[in-house]
Image 1 (cartoon, one colour):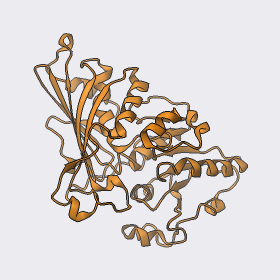
Image 2 (tube, helix red, strand yellow):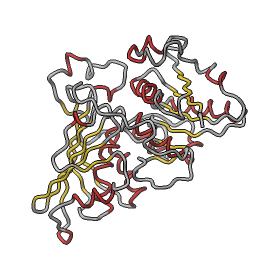
Image 3 (cartoon, helix red, strand yellow):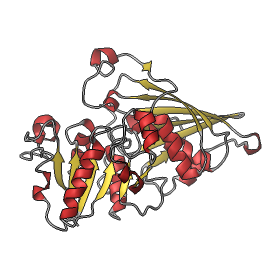
Amino acid sequence: MRIKTIIMGASGYVGGELLRLLKNHPNLDYVIAVSESHAGENINTIFPHLTHSYQDEKFKTYENWSIDIDHGDPVAIFSAAPHGISAGILTSILETLAIKNIKPKVVDISADFRFSDPEIFYRTYGIKHLHAELLSQFICGIPEHIIKTESNFIAHPGCFATAILLAITPIIINDITDNEFYISAITGSTGSGRSPKKTTHHPERHSNVFAYKPLSHRHAPEIVSICENITTVKPKINFIPHSGPFSRGIYATIQAKLKSDKHIDDAAPIFKNHYSESKFITYMDDTPQLKNVVTSNFCHLSSSIDNDQIVINCAIDNLIKGSAGGSIQWMNRLWELPEETGLMTITSPWI
């Protein structure tokens, strides 16, 4: 099956990773790249590293993207459009496809559909949701945790949220802590997107580490919401994000207190059992290193216990497992393809 695949916001960092990964996907290989800011330009002028994969293809506009889609075609949509904009663009695209009798499968990578309540979205992002009628159709979560879904509309969590959820969900499900987590996580500069900012400008970021939005980062309520949906437990999240002097990756360290009646000496069996069917999650005997997962869809986890304290470490690539790769993993599931299809790329540690 050859699925026509639309990438909205295709000229950003996540869009570029989707373009790169999908070129080796056996089913999602008919790509329609849509970009408002670079419409009409060759893809390889924006992403020179993709020159040999996209030699003549151009970015489509939001007006002419549908020219290559015929009545009844199978269609997949990835939205890497900005927060607050994605919902409106997606609504327009869905209306156009409905005229052609097409019911697409959608993975939204923006924040627009991560909360089912528009009021929570407004409190978190400071933006009024203009298409709240679509919210009930979306399920937000990571594919390792949502075993079955009837929906064809998925909201992918943020990159910080992805790393932290992979680390704490098995602990919450096994009920071994008081469910209050103290989290310090550091991210690469690509996590802020392609548009340059002071905090991503190389002279500011190089040889530098700094915390930002301590205890008030917008991924914290997202983590709580997804955890509650999956486990029925509402954890307390004390989250301090940090900016790191590298381009990609997230490294999270999570600490919690063990319940007095659930004391264990080793949490390894919990993680190994929980992720026994996963192609991408590996429990490590030693603490993970970021270089061993960057440029891949893999996640490395470890844990340590001393008396009544547990520490969990998690390493992922923010652009892949935390965004583009995790979204392709979801799309594979929606089309009933093996989750690992197109994603078993080998890590490049010396970048």
